[in-house]
Image (cartoon, rainbow, N blue to C red; front, side, top):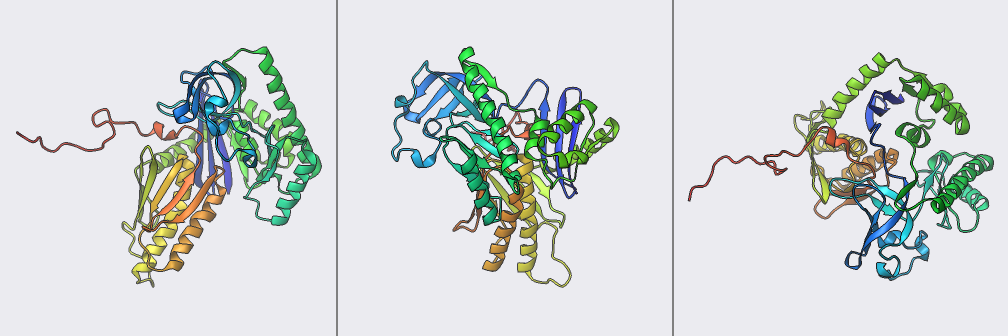
Length: 418
């Protein structure tokens, strides 16, 4: 059973997504610390750096946001110039412009922003200036993709862009039109609001974590959604009645003691999943190391020595790698690991086994809503993939930098005498 569990506490809201009893996504939002990704600001350019082809803009936060030259060009890739102009030709210091946060601030870095605006709805993402129609690649049926693309072309106005999401599968023109009209009006109100404000200021704030996940993740594949607060439950029901009334019956009330008990179990699973060494059910294990540039995952057989009737080392290694592929896909979602990821699977001799391990990783990651790409095996026999990260890594709850070693992880055993 797939389940969304929402626990509203005094100071924070926690949401867990379980697929077949396994924790695959976890979100936490404090009342004083709302997410910034998706917010739209009227900003002021404070510094233009030609050498970096970027600018820093003031959006009213502690740290200035980073605006790259690509995010100032036409949002339609086919209309972008082959040779990028200098950023000094596109923006100047002191200029005011509208920007949208695409990546949360992290560590010493400020937020990443763009002028390629995107407003997500239930069935589509509305892009006011993109001038094209896209369809989610997760929709497997080519006929359905073509149907939705044709509908999108008929519904949009010249210059507008829309991307049909997986939730649009099977939707008719009326449902898509309702979504589009709502998002178009929302954008118009945001755009008009800029005239009444001075930079830097917030023009549009993305939804709180619960309604955002109801919009993006609560589909027919979710069997139940439980929540421990009656007021928030009613707001979720009202939201669903507007775009997915067939899901209202799946929303249930869970008394706080029951909800808290389940969250305690989820907390234990989070602690296990955020360790450097993560055990596999068979006895094998993964070692996860993250650096500034990439994340490296090492697969080991550990205590797994194969099963009865399988006396082949190749089969033992293959079984471990197949199990590891599924666990890695889960950890990438749960930890929200982004950027370059290198997986050192245990060496396999048969090409067929390598192909099956890659296929297992690709198929398991299809449920990941973050943009990702499994590139494949490198010449050194490593699996390479990339994944887009938007929110702050929740590992900060479980791991902090050691003040003694500053993250080097080494202990001096003796001091050299001169």
